[in-house]
Image (cartoon, rainbow, N blue to C red; front, side, top):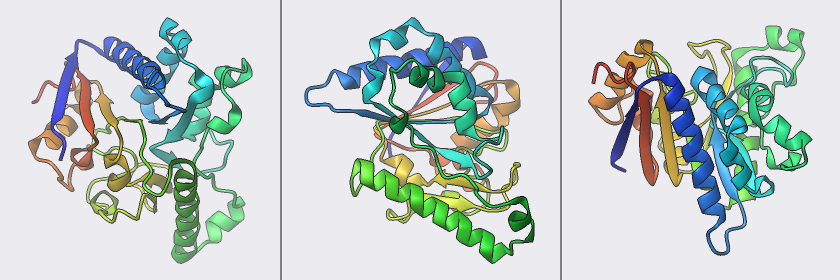
Length: 263
């Protein structure tokens, strides 16, 4: 298990600027490696995650990146209609990469969104739990296939970015829900039904997939997250605090002073 390193910033604004700069500089450094063809990053939604993406899009450091060689993935997604405002992908497009595509700097095919729920409202309402599970399993399998097709039999992300919820969840791995404890290396993506945070259906990367990342960055801010950070730091692999399972070749927690106030 990788040693966890922690950096504390004075406030959410400085945190977002720091995470954005770190991401952009790391992408540029990776692209400069000999024989490097591409960089693959998994981004996150939520208040902190979308704000970081917005800051990335506004940063002058973005000019140093060859975006045609960057591929964007998601750590998790709300399993809703493709045009839903709840979609992390829609929010990220509006905050960041949509402009890159419009300007011709990033090919649209470099964006690897998780599957959306294509069912009608009536089909969703009348579906049995077993039918819903089957739909979620198919969506998870589709995304896992894409990861393997793009990145090989043992896919690894260059950068995986995650926020943390007040309940210490990350991605869509929730406390005492079971998905965080999946340790089968062949299960890289899983569906989540009855999420304790709406909307109830999710698709998420599993810990075995996250642990293969070269750089795993977990970031969060505000005092309302302080209990979650304390729980995640109390012990590793705590099912009551799924963010304690975060791992990777490099594992950084990037938090502000309020989120760190109970450590």
